Image (cartoon, rainbow, N blue to C red; front, side, top):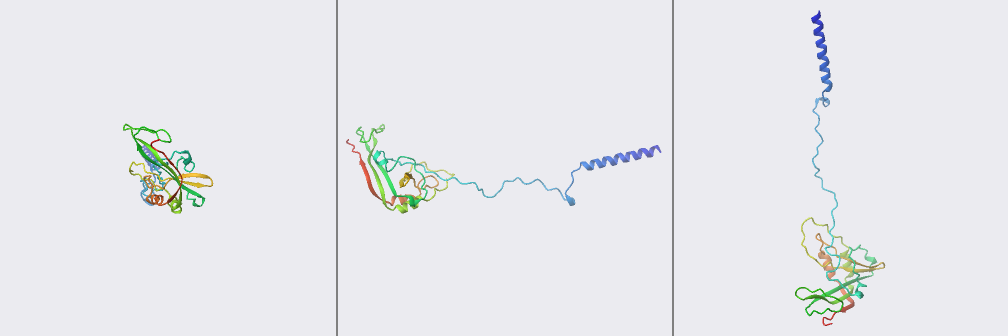
Length: 212
């Protein structure tokens, strides 16, 4: 009788332990199917929607700017902007230019000081001119209305190219605008062709005599 009670006690203990272990087990998926694995963390292969940066001009001022005060009334010395394509607001288009010669006589020409190098030669403004576009203005404005190209992520030639700046007169004043640029910041072929294709009427010209 005592042996039977001991056996019954061991059976109850064993059953209780089995139930406790079953309660600690992780339940499976319904129907006995294996649990799905963790969600994939692989990077997406969808195309990126990040905005692409726009190229900026290498220069925003002329390679050889005018300096005569009379000419700066037509072509103020401020950084050029991209044309906003408001062609109807443009009253006049100005182009200002200055040419250089080399002088070795050690004399400063009209207009001020010169910078000399080891050779004694110096750049001296010879002719400074303000002109008005008399033909080809519509084509020029159309070409300058084009947006700049997206900037490249590759290498570009390190070159100071003329930005082909023109000065636009509107009711609000005079604003310089540069030619639209390619992926490296240089004027596009279409803008270059439009700039070179205009006809100019001289408004004011100032000459410096190297002998002065």
